Image 1 (tube, rainbow, N blue to C red):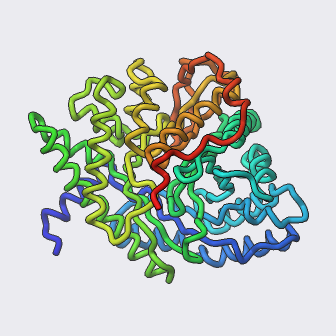
Image 2: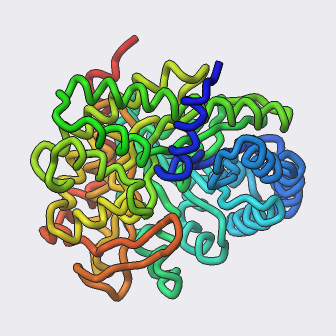
Length: 452
C-alpha cells in the first residue's frame, strides 16, 4: 500500500531527478513473413507490424497521463532480418529496411530494431547480404537500427565478422557524413547478444520469444545520484545498500508500466531491463553517481571499482522488484549520452583505455564513442575484438557502438542533439593491428564455456 511519503518521493524523483521509463519496446516475430518474393515479404512485414503495434504509442501515452510517469520512447524490435534474407530471390535487402522504416513511421514509434544478423559462429545464407547492405540501409532510413552479434562465450569470436564490421561501420559513417555520421550511431556490434533487449540500437526479437511481447527499459541515474549525494561520510556498504533500495523503487515503476501496457495491448509482458540509462541532461548521469561516491572525476583510479559496486547493487535491488528481469540489466556508460562522461573526456580524465576497463564490470561496452574520421577500419575492428574478448571470457554481453566523425579530429565535438547528445572526438591508439585482424578465422570459445 502506498502512503503519502511514497507518493511525494516518486513525484520528486520525476520532477527533480529525471526519473522516467526510458522505453517500452514491442517485440514482433517476422518468421511468418518469410517469402522468396521480396515484395510479398515486404507487404507481410508491413501488415504485421502495423497491425500488432497500431495502439502501441497510444497505450504508452495513456499510461503517462494516468500515472504521471514519463515514457520517453516507444519502440519496436523484430526478428533478425538476415533470416528473412536467406530465402530471397532478390539479394539486396534494403527494400526490407525501407519497409521497416515505413511501418515505424505509420505506428509512430521512435525506432525499430532488428536489421540484424547473428554470425558468432559463421555466416549463413542471408547474413552477408544484410551486413553488406547496412551502410545503404541506414543512409536511406530514419528509424531503422542495426546490430550484428559476432561472438559468444559458447562459440568464440568470428574474426572474419569482426574484420568486416570495422569496414561496415566506417562506410556507414561516410554514407551519412552529411547527417553527423549518424548512421554509425545506429549500429551495435555484440558479443553475447540477448534476445529480449528493449534498448536501441541493439534490440532485436529473439527466436525464443513469443510472437509478440512487451519489454520495458527503466532509467534513473539522477535518482541514484541524489540518493548517494545524501550519504556524505557513509561507508561503501551503506552506499551499496542505499543503491539497492533506490533500484527497487525504480524497477517497481517499470514493472507497473509493463504490466499495464501489456494488459492494454493484449500481449504478454516480457521483462524489465534494469539498466541505468543516462541522458545528456545535467544530473542524469552515471558518471556523476561515481563522482558522488568520492571520485574527483569519472576516469580516476577507482572508477572501475565504483562502477562494479553500482552495477551489482542495481541488479540486487531491481531483481526483487520485478517478476521477470532480462535484457542487459546493468549501468550504461555511453559517452555522448552522459553529461558526466562528456565532461570527463573533455577534462582528460577518461580515455578509451579506461572505458574499456570499465566495460568489464557493467553494461554494455564502448558505447557512443566518437573517434577521428580518419581512423582505419582495422583499428575499429580491433576495438570490437577487444570488447568481444571481455564479453566472451566473462560470460557477459559486451558491445561496440563507435562513430567515426568524418572530417573531424580529436578534440572537436560531434553534436547529435536530443538523447544522443554530443561526443568529443577521442584519441585512439594508432599502432596498427592490421596483421592480427587480417588473419581471419575464429577465436576458440574459452574453457569456461564447457559447462555441460
